[in-house]
Length: 586
Image (cartoon, rainbow, N blue to C red; front, top):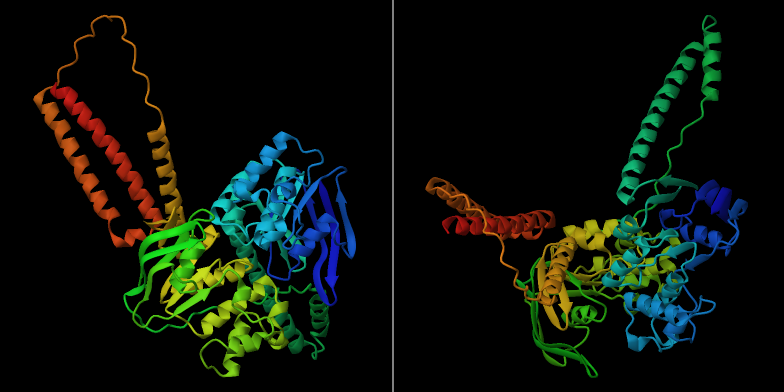
């Protein structure tokens, strides 16, 4: 479909690609990865014709249709539904039904379909544009950070949709779970070249590290060889009897193609200092009601965050997750009830809208110095350096920063004055995978209470030990991480479907059948054996229930899942054994 041959691309002195090649075939599912600034978005633009390589060729199959979702789009005054249909030449009432279904999957309500996109936030405008691409069903989908503005339920829907898509998919994403579900190979833009790894993201990381270790070993061997040759030359070049051998060694040394170790790009280092100790009850919402106009989000809500909990909020779009986080943070006041902050608790709130946290007219350095705690400028610049703000970067105005830079600066401000209650709303948006990994490591070690919203399943699984599900103003706690929560929700959905299934019609009386043969009689000894077997199953069930109730199991979703499955299996065996014993007794 697309043949990329020996392309090079530079911006000034910065070389992004040098003689790089790649073949893209029908049905390929590639994730483009690489550090910030390696050229991922530029590579996408070259695939769409919005940018040209400095040299080399990109050849497209004739008649190829391409759908491209950029990180920034132009917002129009058309309605949401019209935007979704905008790439269809002659939309019919069926295509319109498909558009509404896709829009609903991406979180839009029926009442949103007629609203102008220009009235909505940039994130919702991006969803409408994404809907138009999915409805278009092009030969190739190019998606640049498609999950950035989606909530968890929309991300799950999009993953399912893309898994069923028959065309070619090329995606830039920092969401590991999304990559592993949707993509079948990782294309790494590394060291000014392109390298394909046929596997998921973990396979890519493992293979890349193995290759790095092999390269280091070859480099060390070569350096040892060079050292030996130089020592030999130094010892023998002045002696007449060995001068010819020294000259041979010199020629051999000159022919060696030196192995170069690639320099690792800059990486983010995050380490939250230990915050002050606070009370066991961190923050409490007591009889809280919150409404927006006629919409009641919470009514008579009672909830308490306890010390050292690490909780992820889950729920459909509009379920009140961000509202709950703002109520806990004290950013908004309840209409009724009260928010009670625990003893010696200081709250840090990380808004989804980074612009609310930063003064656009300040420099990076001035913003960091205004963290609420006095620090020497040298120390602040050291912290900013750990977040990749180095040299003259600290004198940039925050209004010109990219989304990722604003996210890193907001995190740096929190680090400079660490709270013992940390409330984060979509902290991974605009961060690359390396920065997400750095944040995961820091939050695992964070010695405080954490409550956060994220659409990144990998991020949630790596940090959360509880999921707090918001639905219709009711909060339900699920011990474990997101995988365990997803399993429990699937079980509940299955149980609800079974309960809603209409009762089977009563069977019609059958004609008299021939008498059944006399059943085999069970002896007392065999009945006692069956009873002992039942007793053993019951004890095993009680033991499993005790294991499942242990606090340490709450944080081990794998163990919790295994024990839950074992419990279900034991319940089935107990039911079978009880039925068999009743039949035997009869």
